[in-house]
Image (cartoon, rainbow, N blue to C red; front, side, top):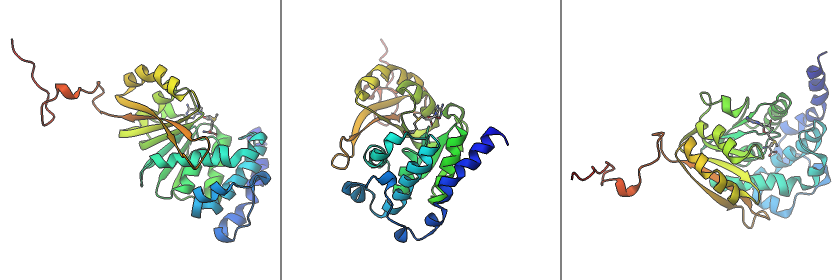
Length: 266
Ligand SMILES: C[S@@+](CC[C@H](N)C(=O)[O-])C[C@H]1O[C@@H](n2cnc3c(N)ncnc32)[C@H](O)[C@@H]1O
């Protein structure tokens, strides 16, 4: 048996144990708490009707996710606040029915969380590493997420294959490199939503000039989830502004109706 097959068969156990549970009525599923971490009250408010499925995802992360080395064991006690809830509030920035590509999804953060919370979204989890895509595919099937698909590959190789209204990413790459991968995947007016830490503003300022060279865009830093998560989640949003490939003409150069003013003849 090859090492990868051996790994795959060993890895199936912890996830398989949830299969019966996932196929049962979500309302009647046992009230598990991932790694004995009790979901905070605010998790119930945030996740509402999707709480039973979110609990099962938390269990998958805490069990198979840890056993397969997809998340560290020390993350388990803070799975809810630091990971699931922190990712969930990004949904505030995504309108109904949008198509989302989660670049570097890893164990499914934030893509699986968004897919569970927002069945109206169509989410593609993009991840290059096989053992991660295996876990993600198992999550999609066990949690019966009909609006979520898994794609194995590197973002920079998907320019011709994927198009999205939003690209999400958490802990994947520095902003300039991430934008180089994500902006080509976006439709006009689409946005990259990069979850970042405390240094988001300075990272954006350092990257700003490079971003507009890649594709005409505007960028800002937004804090989402105030009152739902503490601290609020920081997102760098980079929105594509023009398809021309050149910098946008400033308003003062435009005549009413959108035509360019002709230069005055002298
Ligand atoms: C630190 S992990 C973060 C995973 C997840 N987003 C999270 O927050 O837990 C970074 C992930 O990005 C993936 N990755 C690295 N380079 C990539 C690329 N070029 N395109 C897509 N994903 C990539 C890695 O395989 C890894 O799963």
